[in-house]
Structure formats: C-alpha cells, structure tokens
Image (cartoon, rainbow, N blue to C red; front, side, top):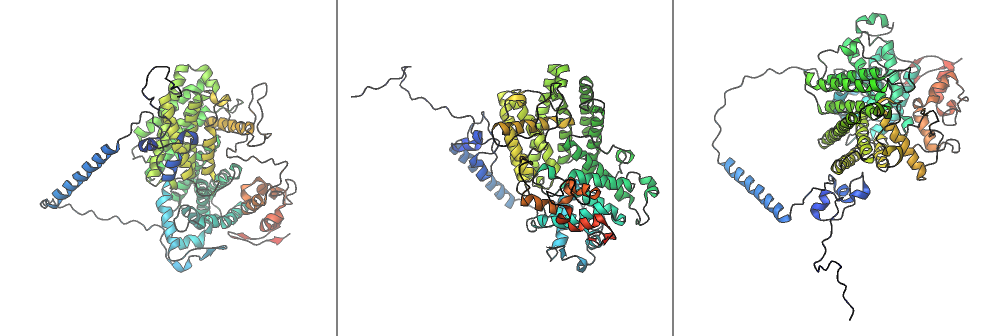
Length: 634
C-alpha cells in the first residue's frame, strides 16, 4: 500500500486557491477565466465579444446571485407599487395659465429652392436621390457644423452647387463619414475632391473665396483617410487656406477695400470673420499636433471676436488664444531646442496654467463637454514641459512630483470625458483632432507606469483608462488602417515599452514644443520594433552625437517601415499618388520642374503619366475654371 504524503506544515485542511487580481470585474462577477492582463491594452476576450467595459479593480467584491435576485425583486415590486398609485391618483389641480411666448422666426437651414438643379452625379460618382442630398446637408448641420461653424447655413443647397461645387462636395463627403445609409459616398467622393483641390492649387476663383477657404478648413478637421502619417495633407491645406484668407484681407475686416480683387463679389464681413477665426483654430490644432509653434498669431480680429459666436466655438477660441500665448512665451528661436531656459520655462508653466484654469470661471457662457476636453488637453500639453530632463534638473523634485500627479489626474479626466461622449453617441462626430488628446493622455499614463512613479492602486487605474483610450481610438475608425486605427496600434506598442529611456521619468526630445513626450514614444517604439525584428533599421533613427544634440527622427508613429532604397513603390502607392497628388511634395515641385525628372516624378513616374491634365496646365497657358481645365499649348 503506497504511503500517503503528509504536508510539511502538518495541516490536513485543503489549501485555498489564490484568485488572480488581474481579472476584470465582469469576469470576476461571473467567476470566469479572464485574459485582460495578456491582452492589455485591449479588452479581455469576453468583454470585447460582448461589448462590455473591461476594468481591473483589485478591491472589487462580487455580488452573489441570491443578493442580485433579491435586489431585482425589490426594484420590480417598487415599480408595481408606483404603477398602482399612479392609476388611482386624482387629477392634478389646474395650474396657473402661462402666457405664450411668441416663436422666434429663424432663417431656414440649408434650404432648397429648386431640387431639379441639384446634381445627379459629381464626376463619375452618382448621388442618391429622393431627398438624400438635403438629408446629408442636415446631417452635416446637426453633427459637424457645431464644431467648426464657418459655413453660411442660410445659403440654399442648389445655389451652393451652382456657385461652389467644391464646398458642396466637401459637405457631402464629411456628412457621409458616419452615415448609416450613404456611408459609401465618403470614399467615392475623394476623386472629385482631388480635382477641386488641384484646381485651387492652380488658380483660385475669388468670386467664391469664402466657400473655397471654408471647404479646405473642413477637410483639415475631417480629412480623408490616409495610410501613413506622411500622407496627411491637413497641414498643407491649412497653409493654403490661411494664405488665401490673408491674401483676401480676412484678417483686416475694417480695411477690406485694400484687399479687394476686381472680380470679387460683395463681401460678407461676418462670414469672413468666422472663417478667419476658423483658420486660427485649425492652425492651432494642427500646429500643436505637429509640435510646432502656431503660424497665426492672435491678432486684433481673433482677440476681439463678435458677441454672437456660438458658445462652444467662442470657448474653444479663448482656450486656443491662451495656449498660443503660452507657446510664444516658451519659445526662443535663438536656442538650439527653440525653448527658453529651464528655470524661466518652469515659471511660465505655472503662470499660464493658472490663466488656463481661470478661463472656466471667467467665462460668461456655458461650456460644452468638448470645451472641457480642450481645456484639459491644453493644460496637459503645458505640463508635458515639466517632464523635460533639463527642467527636472533645475526644479525641486517635490514640485515636479506634484505637477506629475496633477498630470495624472488630467489624463484620467480627459479619457473619462471622451468615454462619456462616446457613450452618448457624439464622440464619432468630433473632428479627428480628438485623437491627439486621447494619445497624449494615454502616453502620459503609460510613461508614469513605466517609470514606476505611481502606487499600485494608481497604476491599475491608469491601465484601466489606457484600455478605455485604446477602445476609443478603435471606435473612431472610418477606414482600414486610418489614423485612429494606427493610434490604437501605437498605444498598444507603447504599453510594451518599459526599459531604456522610456522607463525614466524624463523626456529628452525638446525641439517639439509640448509634443516631446509623444516623439520620445515614437523614437522608443521604433527602436523597440527594430530590436524585436519587426522592422528594419532606417537612417532616420540615429544615435545622439557626443555633444548631446538631437537628430531628426521619423515622426511616422504608425509604422512606415519600408526601405525606400531597396523597394519600388507598390501599385497601391502609385494609385494613391495619382488620386491625391497634392498630398505629396512632388506635386508642388513639378511646377518648377515640369518634366518631373529632377525628383523622379510621382512615385517613380513622371507627371504626364500620373496626371496628364495637370501636366498640360503646368506647361501651357489658357483658361481655367473650377472643376474644368482648358489649356492651349505654348
């Protein structure tokens, strides 16, 4: 008979299995196995399948099934009692009569005078009938216009098509991004939009300059999908829109006669005012995203906006003006990194943080949720300067630690507010610039976790919110591998950065304003992928020289990892360059070099092969009108 092994402790009671603290609350409630830890920052398999909120909370205590049934029974009994009491309730006494308020007559939004004038197709793209165009314009007014109210909504839809097909097509393209029925229009309209933008690059119709600039600004806030960050034409379009607005005197509303073109129509001063304010806001958002100083300074028109601006638009303007002032104060073009001295930088950070916080209390108008997100993001961007290694070297560690704690709280609030907007169904209509605060808040939290600057409880909270941010980026997806999907993958990769420079509590990239933390993550992501054998090394990732100066780093955080010296462009890349030539530098340099041979043309092809009508326009003379090019050869 085999001998029985007796435990060394002498205890005969069975050992109780220790439960994992890494399981999410939903799986722990059901006593199911959970893979939340291995799938981080993705939700666990069960929560992902059932579209549940996946959160890890070590302090969670499950509710027994018996207690849950009792709670449900009590709630049901209370509802029954309320129903019985309501059915036997005597009629309410007559309330005092309230005088009627006369209705305020408002101008109709995007009216249609003659539906027969509306187009059946734009280029080769057929448009739906039966009032679909009118419906798309109402979709644009309801969900997109409030975020950038620069379009004159009193203009009839058919009149807009007759005067400026570019803006007409842009509104339909933007409105169809999330449309349940006509969502396919968004991708199909990119080709005619390409033609309109090409026309603007060659010759502008100043009779419809307000509409042209407004269309370009809309395409900056809701841009077409692009596969790589280098293909994002928003920065280029914003520059074109700004220059056109300056050329036509949008920034000098009281002296417009000095900027009048002979063929210009009667100017709409109020409309030009809003468009110039829109130019400033778009420039601020895109400049901050690039980590560059804003190219538009807050001038007289921007600092003195009209009183009838929509409240969210006016609040966004106040935030952008204050943040832009902070960027200017922190900048010094005479230093290698473009910033003032660290000690001065620390004082300015505290000063402008106080000024940003005072905006909310000083505002006479109600703030919307997106205004709260914008304010918190501006403050978190300002706090990013505190993480720079030269600031931490001269400032007391206690002060920097307090600022880091505040940054942790700001990042949590940003993700929480955006998650609430997603739950209410408004997040998917936000401008794509909303991706920046999501990524910024995520890498702030991941940086603090990697540097072990948080307690275990706060680290768990940070991971829960990073998991939420990852799901938000995925929800923002419009096309495969678009910017939001690549942002989700970027967050996923950064979660694996623990060693090296990323594990330290400081930031070394100082030449990108408040985006230094992001570009540190980009650099570490590239090096991590090279070490893991995921991508090949590139010349753009270089070691710092002995003097400690920073080399240029590839800013494509989404994985543009091909070796351009050994691989020819794919047919897909060539087709993309043919569809969107204005997104590439070769399109602009080809006007100075019409043969396109100096730079190898577009993707290895000369310009005549890629875009024959633009080839003719750059080498000939003739009449050009929007949507059509007629050229006679020299």
